[in-house]
Image 1: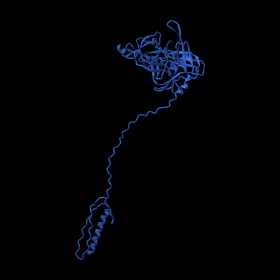
Image 2: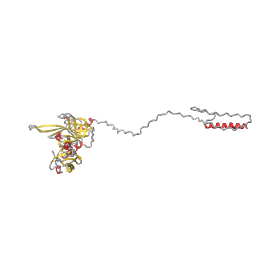
Image 3: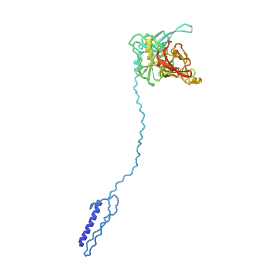
Length: 423
């Protein structure tokens, strides 16, 4: 019986040890090398061999299970890295639109001049005047012209041929012909001639040629009447819409300003772009300084634009004269200083100094002392603006509304513009 109990104890101890090994996932005879020291496991008790005595053996005490020792491999710990700062999510400011690269291909000026030059002519105007003693004297003036149609129509400046009794034209091939005066206009300083023959090389008048400040331009003309052909100079468009005082006390409006060198004799010649298109008629040049010590002027030139040239030329060819809208009044500027002196509520405008009897203004009831504030919906700040409207925006026979300041208040009258009498 004692042998049986001893064998039973041995079996129970074996079961306990097997359970402990199973919980620790360790197979018998298998060795795991831990990454760090583990506590020493409790040794398995050695079974007691049976004795020869017959003393009854008390029941075997319950053996508590050994604590489970998990052999867990510690993972390799990576060094801690700094947390990167997140990028800003703000919407970036858009860059301005890039300026497109300029077109550096500029046509050869020599090629352009060679193509255009056959339409440029030199003019010599013969005039006869009386001197101080009453004797008749002959004088000559020179200028330039542009053939604008195969039929031989030539445009130039009025001041080049004014009062001429004979106009001699020299063509590009050297041929000289006498020209006929078709018509001239003092207010625009333009004139149209006609030379004999047909199928002439020409530069047409076109209002569709775009023009910008800074654009390259070429002037061709009979500068100083030098022998050997016309003179060519190159510059840029300096400004548009200029107004200056022309000859005879008249103002010229909506001119092209250029730094192209223009000399005496260039008047009436073409101002062309680098593609050989006619964009202006060279007319006036300012140079030198004031006799009173004013600021010197370095050769600022002006040319008549194509819109004016085309409108005037068409009328000169059709009627021999230009019909300018006419009010029939004499005008003066209202300045802020004058308005303050007379305690006027308006500060700008054109003052009516006198009214021609029977004129459009007289029929509309406009009186001396009235102040024109606007015409045809356009503000009038001074006399120049009113004259510009009459010459460029309003036509003969057109009915317009005129806003007037009179007797401390404003009123509006309707007026039909007349035809300016010939000078």
